[in-house]
Image (cartoon, rainbow, N blue to C red; front, side, top):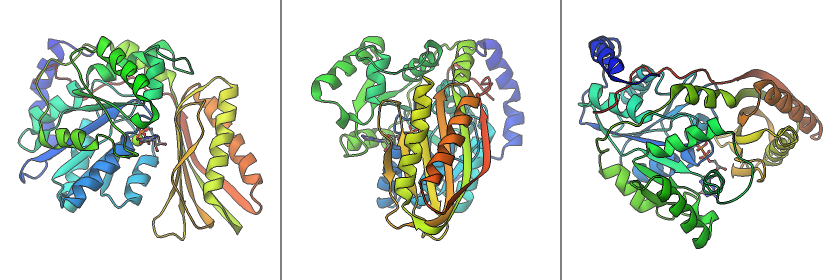
Length: 397
Ligand SMILES: Nc1nc2c(ncn2[C@@H]2O[C@H](COP(=O)(O)OP(=O)(O)OP(=O)(O)O)[C@@H](O)[C@H]2O)c(=O)[nH]1
Ligand SMILES: [Mg+2]
């Protein structure tokens, strides 16, 4: 277990070394650091984009930081396509790559001097208060004001996790991570709230309050704007409180993360005759979904972007956040496409090999339905996330 006084003592000893290894963010006025967490598919990137747009429109400079266990991130492609300065930290979570997080902030500072950083951690990651926000405040407190940590919860997923409704879900150790994420939240944010009527929403609130009585709970919809004002006001104008970090069993956490299969890949698409890219994305997502459902592999998030070679930066994006839903286009490409790059990020509770087989088969089948389309798999990585070993862990401020 990576907790306890011993850990903190070691951290105090290495603080100086760390500071010398990682150049602090240039000391402008303190920048605000906002972290928006929550389980895979909860709506983090969508909310980050909304907040970034809101702040930019107010004339504030914003820098975004994305994070993933693998390379080639759909989230980075999505946020950059909307014109936001975005740095990514691939190949491990913020807590295990703390110095990379500070370096990412430095790079953004060198480019655009953001007044606000918005960071999205990996959706299977927890213990972010002890391993990210407290270290930031202790080691770089002169540079950052840290906002309360928001943890988003997809309401349909949450109704199942809290046993209020039936439907596909995850095994016990994955749910351990899910609940721990909520436990460490300063603000629990029920996302996509327009999906529930008042009765279901109130039932969910009560269930969350029953387990986490001290927590502030909000219900928002990034899609239709419900309650974004009070939430954004809270995280842009108040500071994270100081409380003891939660206890976490790193063995169960590691086992939970390892239950999730991870696949990231890039595919080069080329066709002699232009094809409907939105239709292609939806068909491909459905074909992957069908194969995973047949194997009882619960999808946490399947997301794909298609970036046309000859576009003006517009991209198509499709998402699927559970097996018994339909793939949704969250960004569309109105014009037919002749060539481009496809990014696929898939996280599901299944063996990584099974994910790779499902993606390869679905790609071949779907491409064959589009005359003259050639889909060449360029790069594919599939793995189970390794045991989290945070750079720092501070149990208090
Ligand atoms: N109905 C509805 N859907 C939403 C809302 N916000 C986000 N979504 C959808 O939820 C899906 C997942 O959204 P993302 O923002 O990519 O979720 P995420 O938490 O960043 O996912 P990961 O980075 O993979 O963990 C997408 O299809 C979004 O369009 C909302 O307010 N209402
Ligand atoms: Mg995301």
